[in-house]
Image: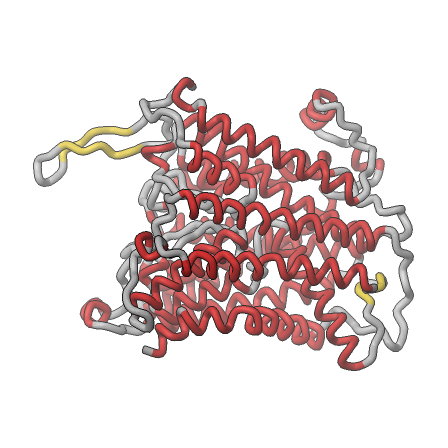
Length: 566
């Protein structure tokens, strides 16, 4: 089988599964997040217990600032708990002699998992115990994903509701339902499929065996299958083993590789159907999905072409760019995984992104710099795309003199300001963080590639830093791999990028939802710009590409573009 045929079959299988699940899963999530009295009377028994134990009134609605306050308070409590769990690891069961996690690593990791980033500046096998992995990190994989979905649904409610005084739902109900009714059942199914493919599930520390050279060595074990499932399904990405999804215990076969790719895309894609169903116009959801698909397939095509050629002596000898890639996945499986994870804020890797060609590495970097909206993380992709759609409506209205309205809600100065702020947070964090880091005298000591200005090593080293801050600010979590980020500067600066990159846009989006919910609907007229169909899909795609290009072209020109032209 040729690489082209293998790539085509894998893509066809992924698309087929997503197409089969699109309608039932999307409509199911729309019903789950319904807020009418009849549906709430059918709460699961465990949901009722949670509400009772936590003193939550499931029928009480919150305005945007109450919703945001609950979300931020829950995230803060989660971060403090996860930090304490790591610091107390040495006195907890199943420690396996690992001891407490250092303060800097514990801070960075707590922020990373609470923000759905899963950036890992440590070796999991030698740092985190099974209790920390299961009780701390795996739990955050569930609830951080549920938080993202809750924000997306809150924005949809704001667009649907008319003159409700700003109520956009109940955060605690949305969090509970997203976790128990969507993420948990799907994660169980995916974990069972992964177990059938040979993914391990063990609470032992490891086993000792004898190598071919006659020396004994220890192979680490962990409860992998349960965490691998939600790691991909919740677009988290943090590996329970250091090699992440390149490790044969996490991703042993080409089939498991496809299953994990499908798990990553499943909810973000289906949420566009949820959006269309909840607003009562499914063409709107299909338009958003079409834009996501165009961006995804374009990056996939560019990356595949870049990695399929043979550039350099080693690549020519191997017949392709196989450095840093697993033979069991090959070029097609590695590229499809890389484009999927960088387009969905997942951060999982089954190959070394640092070993990709300059054009291939630059393409997946640009995939993140789009804002990870193709199709984006669980919830984050949808609400980020809707914010860009509002920007596109405003720009289109200025160009043709039409009224800036989105789904019958006026885009006034307040709404456009909030949308612009939500879009600008990530570029500011990426560019400021990268700029400060590269001028520090100590930075070159942490780069896997460096040299005199203008040399390939220096250019690639700059790309490593740019990728790191793009990954943290977009809550992705993947890394180029050539950058050592264990210093206090990287731990602190990347941690702050993860915090601000996650929660500032969320606050702005929830403020948008509240503003829309308090408006009355404006009937569409001859001057209203349609937001469904091919024309608007083209406008939204162009706006997305234009925003990213104008913002990041100088930085990309100093990194992957310069390296590709050499």
